[in-house]
Length: 94
Image (cartoon, rainbow, N blue to C red; front, side, top):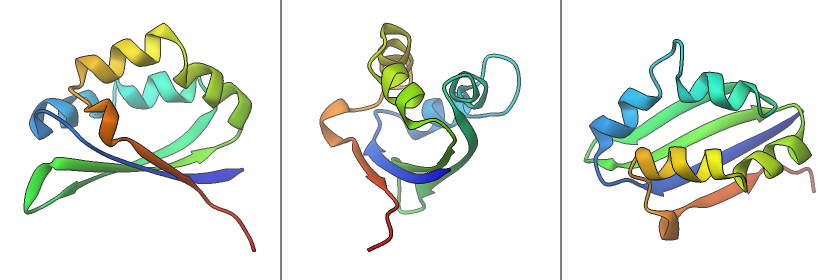
């Protein structure tokens, strides 16, 4: 199991947040199919368009393949993610 942090800017923090509401068709459901077992969502209270995620990932190869897929790219575009701001960190033990 790996823990990841992703942070990025979005066009509209409210639109992005709606995509993360749990239920059928949510981003939680989409990522579960890609090997993500848990997702926590964050927004900057001073700038709601600055967003972040903490993911627990059971299968990094499956997630990496998904992130490169047309489905993932389309979802990020629909959510208004500013691709050039996306940063991902993976937990490691020195």
